Image (cartoon, rainbow, N blue to C red; front, side, top):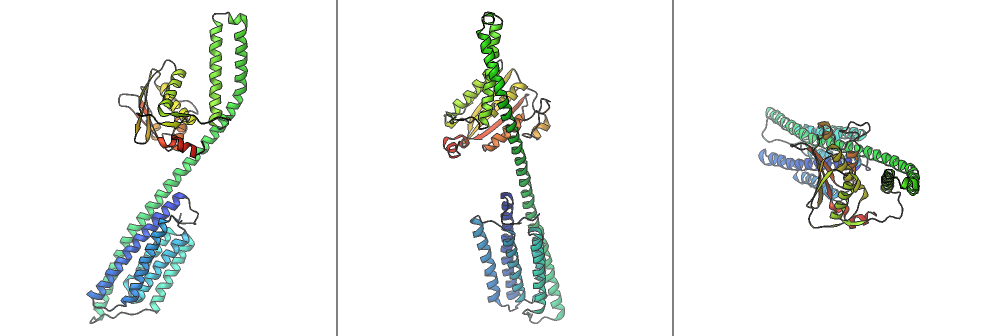
Length: 437
């Protein structure tokens, strides 16, 4: 697939196109230096008179094209197939002009046209690559008919032939070396572009998966709202019934059942709020330490009996806006650790530069190697449940949306450690307001 197709390239393709055109700029600088050295050797070493003025004008035009290209790239202008085609055509015209003033088709450096054709085949669309073939062929044919021959003083035919062969050897080595260096670099740029495009496609597929999960969760929350409300009303009626309220065994159980139903209703409300369906709610301004304390209190309340050890090393507090989605994914990681290690879970927070770093450790069996290799992919679970493995998938995607990252590893003493790194700027009050949150 060509690196330059239209002017409406994706960001990944535009980045690759800019890298490739910079390679052409470097190649043009090499051509300018090489032509200057060649002219000097022929003029001074061999004593051959060359038309230095017009050849100097061609060199100046090449330098001007390079400077204009670099200036255009600094303005972040888009790179198109047409623009690159014109640049390569200009290079071919400059080579033709230099050959015209130095023997035409008899000049061994005429084979540098092959370099232009090869680069066109790699970088351009099919039609423009064939157009370059026609242009270079026409230029070579024209040089066979029209040129300014050069006369080598005091040289016989044998010496001229040997000199021509030596020039062809130099041209071959130069052509081959430049092709290997620059085609490899351009190929590397194209491979990097393909890797970035594949990553973008993967992210798009994951985000689509998350959207579908969100729709299902929102629908389920709506469906569960009515029966949960009904259960809450029935349990309230039971608690007011004298026969049940006076029973020392049933009364506490009814109260516990009602508390669990209300907890389920709170979870449903959180799901709807995360889906953007709660109305009239303002962002909650809090601080980093209060945000972390709230998470710890919530998990200790929900997972009673677990020794959740919290170490807060964040330092001086900072005001932030509480992010419900972030809170949920952190709780999700803690819950996963509790499932793997019901007796002890470690939760540590610290600040590294402008990042909030959270570490959740457990004393379970650790992650299987294949799960570490595919961290953040859906349906990668160590619990063996069908349809499981979505927890870390959601964690990775939420952190990535906020500009953070997720890491996981097994500990040498047993258990696992999950590290969440989050830029504080993504939770800053100014950043949040600017994004309309």
